[in-house]
Image (tube, rainbow, N blue to C red):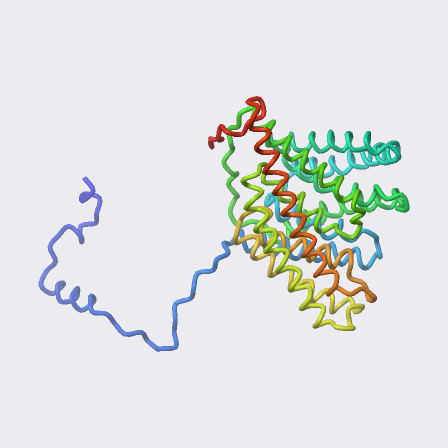
Length: 383
């Protein structure tokens, strides 16, 4: 019985003297001083605080190194640490193998596809679709999700740049490779400086049907390929953030998840653009002073990294703000560059791109559900 587990002082009847003490102790005592208040519980857990520091400091280091070395394609050096530390909260040999393996494979893929088929747009589009289909298939299956997700992200960025004939392809491939290895080194350093207090529990695995896996792979590959085509046909060379937005919402693997991810992504991009505008106004004509830029960038990273950890929603508001700052500061912040025009243009183009992407995904979702072999109507269950 439960009563037998209680201490004897709870089961025995108290004596008269003890009764007075109990009555006296039951009277509410006023606080010792009106100025003392109970501290509020923090929204960040111990592990969350350390992950927040890992994301902010790691992304800050990537930006600092790229600026000191005067490397091109600063977006690689700012976004890759965010991805490795934000989307993937753990760091082990399996994650490193997937991340670096994808980087090495990207060099071969982009060299062959762009170098041999750039003058054959139809053939090139077909090969781009096959590359995206392979990555999304790995993401839908699960064990190699990091390899697939990083492949989708880097392929979209590199194809965006490499498809223009006046670009130095060797410089692009070298920057991607160096940024990948640097991101792994930064992630290892951050996990050593700010280790988790308690072991993280793996997320529950989803048992998916073969049809659902094919549905997720096809809708992701078709949407990513159409995004590539549109940005090439319309010559949207300066709309990297908009194209990245259309790719990051595909990490939800399906139309319903992408719809919520797009809303969060839009909010995060809006906040990131507004913060970039504020920081630009604070810096004013001092944007060529690296120390001031580093201080402003660190403040923005800490704010969005905290939001990303608290919401725990993958590519949500916090991660949208992080990548927006990373693109604006890493790719477009120059002494002669106006971030005001860049921020306004990027937010407006991103909103249009997200709406168009969701419309395309809604149509593809309906069409694919017409065939049982690629239907998503059977909901997955957790195991």
